[in-house]
Length: 187
Ligand code: 5GP
Ligand code: MG
Image 1 (cartoon, rainbow, N blue to C red):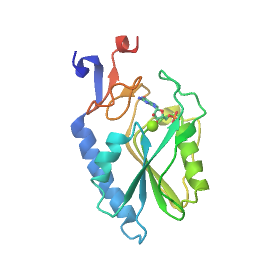
Image 2: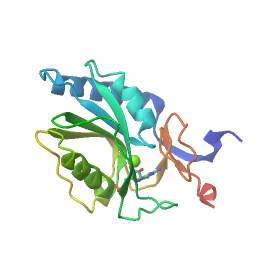
Image 3: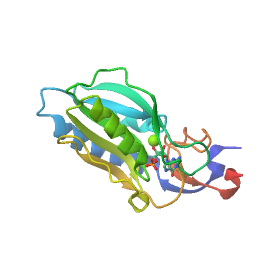
Image 4: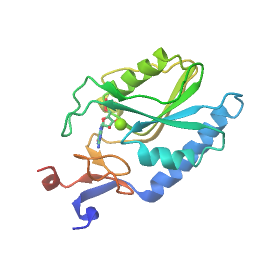
């Protein structure tokens, strides 16, 4: 059965994502174009993999790229609320501008844990770009580091979404759009 048949509705199409990613890319390029020290783009694995790949191709600056992983979802669709860093950076970010790339910010627990971690590693600034934001679900108010900025692709309704990197039980990450699963697919 084709993956599309598992999807009840499409929230953000391939075309809408591509257009927004291009806009974000040029905004972010302007943010850093005056800096002598180019930023380190850090993708939050695994969910941000497709977004990171598309976004960095829209950044016209000499950046470097790394990955970090924070685990909070034991399984299913509800966050455990106490994320931990389970895979750390390879690069030294001391005195560097760091640009965290996330798939989705929900309660804010994961982001707040990641920002604190990058602060301890002495990043000179931490900016965040998330593809999706669910502000209605926020529990933790995270603080950016230095003159870091917050970018968000789209505001997401309070629904569990999959696709474009985001999973349910490690499936559906390879959908090229973001959608909501049919209820029978959670069974
Ligand atoms: P938070 O710690 O902000 O509650 O959750 C952040 C992480 O939970 C995200 O990076 C993402 O991996 C996962 N998450 C939150 N909402 C969703 C959703 O609707 N769908 C999927 N697939 N993952 C989500
Ligand atoms: Mg994530």
